[in-house]
Image 1 (cartoon, helix red, strand yellow):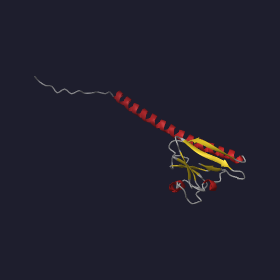
Image 2 (cartoon, helix red, strand yellow):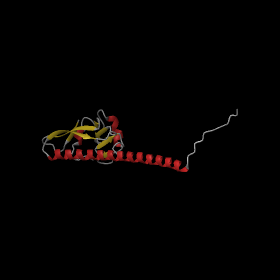
Image 3 (spheres, helix red, strand yellow):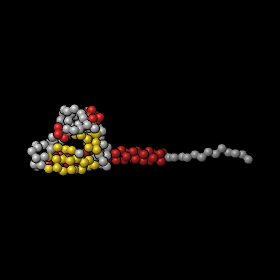
Image 4 (tube, helix red, strand yellow):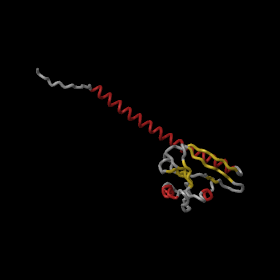
Length: 168
């Protein structure tokens, strides 16, 4: 008996190859678009946190006295929200973060998202109407941990004070 060399050959038409390439391109574009939307969502959450914090501080500042513990939502990539006075020396348990936080200090910023770059384009902001020297008197920077997407802060104003203090 003669043995023939038979080889299976898979023939794909040009149309089939082109269709597969298009599917791969569309999938890549869809994944890219989803990632961009998630980045936009992070930016919105950071902006919302900034607005909510400033609104709560302004409400306390306009009153005569009070204290309130607030919980804010923050994106998962942000490990800490830190208040820092870069005109004062570093001290306390978060001293190691001070030099990194200082990299995004341009002139007046006092709130920084750590690690740097996790704030979705908003690495540091100016929070108005806070007594920064009293807020960071024992820790500079004063960092609030992100626990399950939430940051807790105590916003208070004592009788006779003209500015608000933020604490853990």
